Image (cartoon, rainbow, N blue to C red; front, side, top):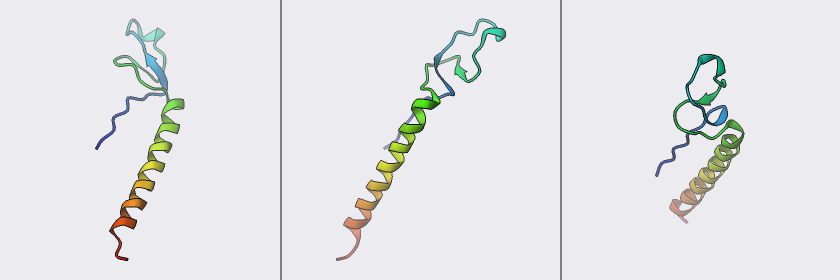
Length: 63
């Protein structure tokens, strides 16, 4: 199983028109999640992975 997140500092995407109008931290290619959305998602994923590993360890330990 794998996970791919497209994230940047600022959510969304912008057109590359001129360097002067670019928003620092916002993608110029694909729309991305912003950091404010990414951080809680990564924390939730880490919690789920830890819980899954605990369950797997408990099932594989001899009784």
